[in-house]
Length: 273
Image (cartoon, rainbow, N blue to C red):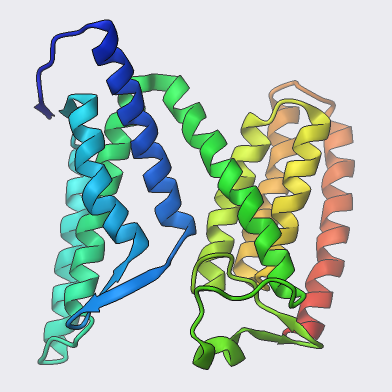
């Protein structure tokens, strides 16, 4: 762990809190937004890379310390080694090699800054992460649904790739503000997990879960839908096992959910085989 010492005052505490917020928001933005700005050689410069390069160090300075997890270090090293072996196996470094390494390093930096923010702020920090992720999930889900029905433009998909976003019968695979609909679906699934865990009011949870689930459906990602279903099925069962509601009622809910999702899966298969 690397620690930058600072005298603890009221102002310093506010700066630490600001640094925590910046770390969380920038990390979440990077997961939901992918906007290309320009390229340096074969390395594309995106909005999230630019924000990360400027705001991750700034947030670390405000927080006054950096905490590095050895597991994240090992994971980053494993990615670097695996990418290097894959490139060397082809006997040359493709143009995208440099970009891949930069993405790994920026991802490691983001995970490290976020880890620092969460460990400094405890449960409050994780709750901040959850609600920030939920906010972006709801906005992204709405954009994804509108894209699926052809109302909202694909701002982050080049025109030559739009044909690959067609899902049939006049529908499209929504991507939100990313390029890959499957990746965006995964981010929405994480948002769904946060909604099931952190939205306490029943009607609000129903609304948020419904919107995010519609967003996942709008990506036409089968894996995203499967993961969403597993989450929704597991939630009442876990609550029942914890004694929060009757087990029989939980089983009924699960049966209804399986029926609904089976119908949705059949519809998706017909529309986007």
